[in-house]
Length: 397
Image 1 (cartoon, rainbow, N blue to C red):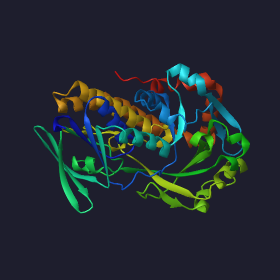
Image 2: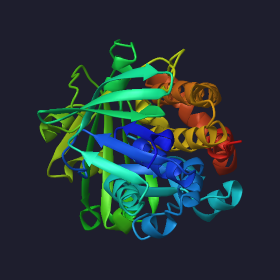
Image 3: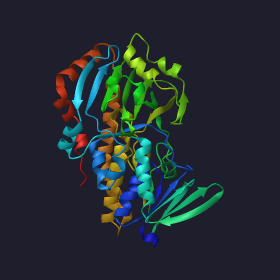
Image 4: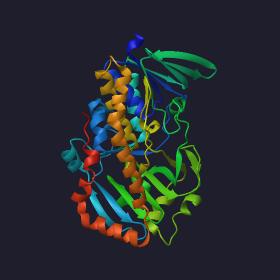
């Protein structure tokens, strides 16, 4: 196939795989380079809000995803010490009616498997595992990429390179931004447990959010309800770069003392037999996301703190807008990429700011926490939900 329609993607995460599918639908040939030898299920749950599910359904992934997802009926916000519900926001069918797409919760491995299977079934997409992008050179007709597979170094030519290789992006560094992500001062711990080991009140289709001093806790069902995904986020100083480092339960429980956290919440935290942890890093918005025939996508461009559950959604949005821009700008690829970047800059920066603010709001203490809880309780479900209209009702042009 002619290289004039070949696009190279660095990274086979959610953003890279979605971009490949979206680009192939627009008539491009796509080669994905992924440095991992296999695509593992590392990770836990993902919340897919309507701005993301709308696009996944457009990519005809519904039949692959529906057997694994859970559609939560509501979000329950609870006090850490007493377990009392502060506020409840309805989700379920009401969300789908309001935004035209469902709110789903799913295991990251199931989403990645659905994307991978769709990629494997597409003759216009090639996935090369165990291969990483080392460097690239932009020229008049596109880009040449240097790749490494074990001891073999190769070159690939294409009309564009998309860096979708995550927070510690080599592509971003090769483009000239060698700044390091900044540590947020927080660590996220994650685990999954069999639904049967949880108290009955927490087994149903709902998202539970517990707010406490210097920590908060989220849990919800995945794998069609057979597992419960648990995420605990704490103020911390550990700054490991591995997003799947093992964590000791005793260390975690030290952040959830009995004076601030009640027996019910602590019981949830004591259910898993093992934990993985990752330090949360951030980056400020980029003024220039790309150059010539290359650009960045997802966490490589705008890593999201997890407090709005929008990391995967922003990568999926990026992928679809990118494909639209390249399809309509085939005669001038660099210009098409700058159009994509301009369309995404304001949106992703706003979500980054909102995620940071939400994280601060979750972990207030004392009078400020009391004021927060009072406001949440008085808002009611409808007002709570309307606060997310700008986020969930997004449509690309």
